[in-house]
Structure formats: C-alpha cells, structure tokens
Image 1: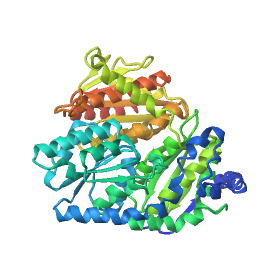
Image 2: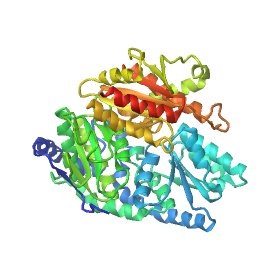
Image 3: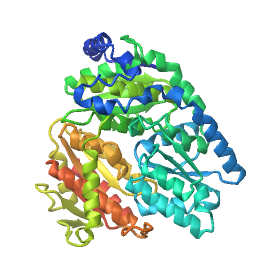
Image 4: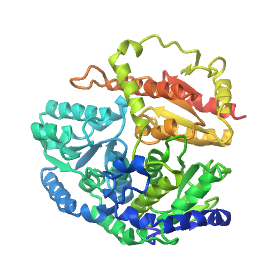
Amino acid sequence: MAGETTGVEIVDAALAGEAAPFAERLVADQVASKLASQDATLWGPEAESEASIRLSWTTLHKSSRPLIGEIEALRTDLRSEGVDRVVLAGMGGSSLAPEVITATDGVPLTVLDTTDPGQVADALAGDLERTVIVVSSKSGGTVETDSHRRIFAKAFADAGIDAARRIVVVTDPGSPFAELSEKEGYRKVFLADPNVGGRYSALTAFGLVPAGLAGADVARLLDQAASVADELAADSVDNPAVKLAAAWGAAHEKGAEKVVIADTGSGIKGFADWAEQLIAESTGKQGTGLLPVAVDGPDSPGFADAKGDATPVAVGEAEGAAKISVTGSLGAQFLLWEFATALVGRLLGINPFDQPDVEAAKKAARSLLDNPDKLKGGEEPSTVDGAVEVFGSEGVATEGKLADILRAFFDSAPENGYIAVQAYLDRLDDASTAVLRGEIAKRTGRQTTFGWGPRFLHSTGQYHKGGHQNGVFLQITGAVEDDLDVPDRPYTLGVLQHAQALGDGQVLAEHGRPVLRLHLTDRAAGLAGLVRAVQEAGE
C-alpha cells in the first residue's frame, strides 16, 4: 500500500503558521497523553460522564487481539460448510469501517445500510446457500438493521436453510440484542467493547468481524494501528494527530468550517466516507463543528476550487489545492483521525462523543410509521416536471420549471453555506445519482455534500441539525416498483424509507432550514431530467 509512513503535512504556509499556537496549546495541556490514558476530563465537566464510557478505542490495537483467532476459526468453519458469501447488516460505524477495510483489501462484502427495497432485494438474490449475514448493532434496536435481520431470517427459512446457523451477531454485552441472539440460538455472538462509540469502533468487533469473515487481514490492521499508537500519545508538536487537529482548529477559527477530503493515491478505498461520520457526528453540535465533504479526487469541484470556507485535505501525498496531506496505512489512519477528531473537539469546546441531534429524525420517522395516514395521500406536489414531483418546506419556492426552482433553491444558501444532496435511493442501481454533487458544486460555487439515505442519518445527520446552520437540503426520493415486507412489522421497507425521508425533512424544517424534496416517479427518467435541470440552473 502506498503511504506506509504515517504523517501529517500542513502544506499551506499560512495555515501552518496559524496552526502553531493551537498545537502548542494542546502540547502544553498534555492533551494527547491524557487522551491516550483515557482521561475523561479533557472536554469539560458536562462531557465527563459520557467521555468516561467512550475512550476504550485508544487501546483497541491491543485489546482487540483476541478477536483474531475467533474470527479465523469461524471463517474456517463457514468455509468448510461452503459458506463464503458475507452480507453485513449495520448502520453508521457498524458498516462504514468494514466497507473501507474490505474494499482496500480487495475482498467482497455485501453491505446493507439502506432501506431501499431494490437494494435489499438484490442482496437477497445472491446465493443464499453460500451466505452468512453479520448483523451488527450495539443494542439491536436500529430499525434498518432489525428489518434486515427479519427479512434474511425469513428468506433462509423459506429456502429450507437453518436461519440461526447463518446469522452472526456483533453487539454490546448485556444488550437486548445479545439476549435475543441467545434465545434464537444464532451461530455466533461477538461482544464488542461497550466503552467505544460507533464512529470510533473501526478496530472493535464491529469493524473486524465482518471484514475478517470476508477475508480481510484484520491482524495486519491492528499491527498498523499499533505502529503509530506511541507517536499519537506523545505531547509534541510533531505528533501527527496534534498537527491535524491544530490545523483544523486554526482553519475553523478563520471561517473554514468545511473539511474537503480527497484521495490522492493512498491505496485506501472509500476512506472519506468513514471519516465523514467520524468528523461530522463528533464535532457538529452546539452550532459549531467541521463539515466533512467527501469528493472523488483532487480535481473535483469543491476541492480544486475551494474557497476560504473550506480546507482541502489529501489522503495520500499532497496534490493540487491540498492544504493538508495525511499519509499512512489504513489501520494507522483510523487511529490518527480518531485522535485528531477527539483533540479538535477540545479546541472547539464540544463533547466529541455524544450525538444529541441524531435521535430527532428517528423519532419523527417512528411517529410517521405509527400514523400511516400521514404517509399516504395528503401529499400533493406543488409542481410536476416530467417524472419529477416537487415538494418544499415553508418558504421554499416550488412553482415553475424545475431548473428555475433549483436555481432559486441553490441561491437561498447563505454566503459560505453549503448544499446537501440526500438521495433516498438504491446506491447500487441508482449510483449515477452521485454525479449531482459535482454538478451542483461546479455550477453554484458552494460546497456540496452527497449522502445516501438513510445511511447519512447515522453520519452527517448530526451536523445538519447541530452544526453551523447554513445548509440547504435537497432530498431525492423515488418510486418503489417492488416493495419488501418486513416480517412481523406493520410496514414495508418502502414505507420505512419514505418515513425516514419525510421525518428528517420535518426536523430540518423545524430547525429553520430550507428543504426541497424531488420525488422521481420514474427513477431513470426522473434522474436524467434532474441532471438536465441542474445543468440548466447553473447557466
């Protein structure tokens, strides 16, 4: 892998000078060494109770070692039974790290972090005779993951397969899910360290079990993290985590509250998607924080043309407009970015371990599921343009041609604000939707994020409600051709997906943020029309 030497370089001389006093403050306060020794007082009295049960991630490179043998033994047993296809049901930290680990190692893993019926149906269409599903949830109460478990259990049973033998669980000790798993007799239950939050869990059972069962070298991953642990614990301005946190803190103070992340040949696949949750959910609260913007590469809009409200960060050697570069192996980068995020939390004066605004969207979705009449009918689009129906929150212009509606909506983003594209679609079959990020960023000159719903609700969703309140939100939903029932639940996946979109939109609107929802009555035709309208809006 490229970039085995771990390091942080602040390429921009002005930023390096501005970051120096922040680094010196962190060193003088011995923040890195105190973090490594799990000092829960670093973020103030209000954060202490939460921090005291959230710091075991600093030593996972040691404490996760016993998992290696357990994972390998199960993988060997499964292979001997002809079971070599691994499906992962998990959200947020339970899916993002395993996806990066397996993609980087080049081993197949089917990740389900969606409520789109088409995407779940595709996963079900794989060879069930060869399939094991890893169901990862700290409590078991995550609605998406519980739905996947129910759907796969029924599919196994319908195919004459002993479902319990094909379900592997990762959860916290003593959780309701651990109790359910024991009662159901599931194949294996891996108990994760309960003193680690989801977004810091890459090197716990949540990251290692699905990746290891899929064939990734998780022992090497722990070795990579261990190789930098002492350096990250050092109270030194040369500590890479201190340098990165200081640069972020200095940039934020100057108004650069976005961090644009591009890979520059690191050999790591999809790292920005993992870092996105870590940074957004850890820092985006109390009206402040860092908004991560994941882009395709250093030539992408938002990175190449970043303005003063954003700091371009290269994962790999510095290229193009990069002001900071971060190099190193995947295991080392996991630990480095976690340390840096916890350190910048102190600089920003927030608790990097809670997520106070995540639950609001979940509650709103549950309320809609409990009142299905609110989901059916009563929704009349303001405008229909081809295969696109237009809905908007109060104050959002929704009349006229789609291009004009989009132009006005994008213009409503405040100076130095951002545009968030939220696609409640199939991220495999509807993958081309992601082109909208670059198209909108290029034509508006504003930082633009892209998230697949409901995946982003467990990631950037915290920042949207708790961070800097200068975003506008473009939701994209789509017609469901073939829905899937959720066994023993009064809703289908399609209904759940719709409720999640409407619920989050409702909460954003309650925060005073503009929300424009575009519903594609025909996904392919609607998306083509939407792309044309975006291009026209930018002319």
